[in-house]
Image (cartoon, rainbow, N blue to C red; front, side, top):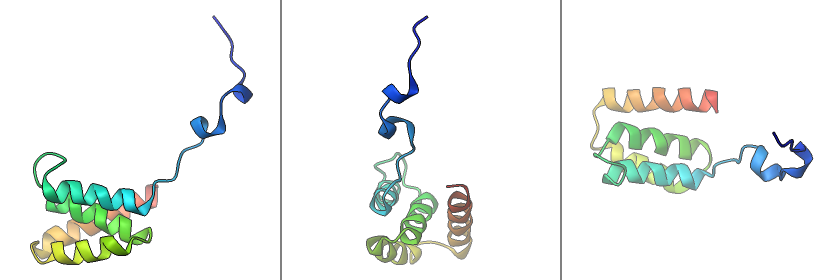
Length: 89
């Protein structure tokens, strides 16, 4: 079996890459529009919350607009999921 030196592997392939706030916002748009399967407002709101927490001003507008179509329970669920994600990542 061949051996490989770790120094031969570029650091960009080993170290985790930070995901941009705009990428999280795009995930929210995918779930809100149905591009990720069935429309899921809770998942969309979750990703918008994460994107907003990471600094996306665009996500703030989307989450505010989406909240008008959601129940309080759905909004609370999205906040819980976002908090869980943010504490783990």
